[in-house]
Amino acid sequence: MVNELTILIKNATVLDLNRFAAVESDILIEGDRISKIGVDFEVKEKENLKVIDGRNKVALPGLINGHTHVAMTLFRGASDDLPLMDWLNNVIWPSESRLTGEDVYWGSLLGIVEMIKSGTTTFCDMYFFMDEVAHAVEQSGIRAVLSRGMVALDPANGEKGLKESVDFIKNWQGKANGRITTALAPHAPYTCPPEFLRDVIVEAKRLNVPINIHISETLDEISIIKERYGTTPVRHLESLGLFEVKTIGAHLVHVDDEEIQILKRYQVGAIHNPQSNMKLASGIAPVVKMLEAGVLVGLGTDGAASNNDLDMIEELRAASYLQKVSNMNPEALNAKTSIAMATSLGARALGLTEIGLLQEGYKADIILLNTNETNFYPRHNIFNLIAYSAKGADVDTVIVDGEIIMEKRQLTRLDEEKIKFEANKRGLKLVAG
Ligand SMILES: [Zn+2]
Image 1 (cartoon, rainbow, N blue to C red):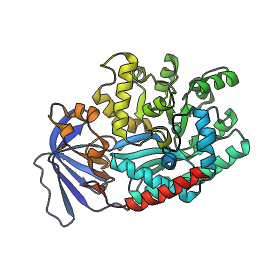
Image 2: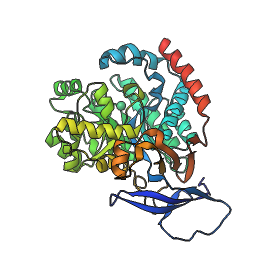
Image 3: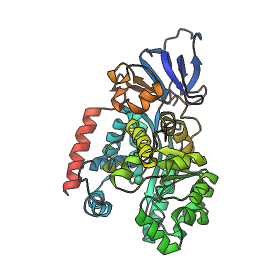
Image 4: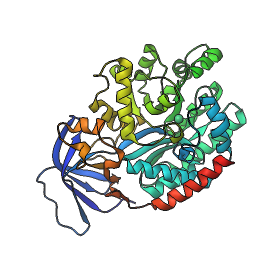
């Protein structure tokens, strides 16, 4: 159901990411869309008009977390500072084997609350018990691209995963006024053999959904693919025809120049996860090179167990700093580009055409940052302030699909205290065994 409230944000600093300008404007939201941006336009007095004072606030498109496993908030901080395989074998996989649908539901809500409170309005998720994640998304008011992760080293497992994925897509695609869309998610080229990936491609074409997959995350993966197929992950997936389907590729840390051209040619969405890549010592993605080549590069946090938070403002800053130090160039990945990766470019990376910009006719996914904190003074340059001094906690108001889901840092739909209580209880129990 489309929400009937009309919202008028008055006198805000509005970020125009087409022109990379900041303009003092009003924004009118009718139903689920932005109907007008400008000054001095007339709004008829009506009963259901909600006016928000935009002074000392900057309006920007809601942030887009392009890669996560949201229910993994349950394992946040359970065990850190370990090599990837130790961490997976001894902590994460045993805990995940005990997961129930209800655990995933509460863990998802915890992650969603954290994302809303730090300005994320859309996330792209891959996990299990996706019906529960979808219920959490539906209730919370956030927007999401959801996919059931499929591992097919054992063919029976792959078959089960694909069947469940197809059912999930049939049940949820376009639900909640289109806030929920879906994808097929073969976990990675080293956990899904070619014959399985071919089946996935056929299904993705038939159902007209994107493919969400991890690609070239670690050097171990590069060796495995080399040994099995005599090539690299990107070339391997290209040869299978996977990129003929809209692909959302997470990580793409270890890619060469020719692979970057392949990603560009097929308009693959490359989701960069700088903090997860740093924490797990996976490596540094050639983000500057990819952007220069015209690849659609978005940003993600990855799961909360390998980050350890879901704050996209922190992530875009980390992305920028990591490129500066790895290129030994302070001009690399500037403030405006890192903001675009978390918004307009991130939307294109996910194949979402109606979000990521504050523009008339676009979906009303808008966040207001309170710029009256000390970290926003003096007001030299709002792009620099957002990229390099803003914090998730500066997010004051969050609007998704034309509905206010947080106002003055209070959630309008969810019971934050109950969610923290349930997620804490369940997370501790899952890890204790
Ligand atoms: Zn991941």
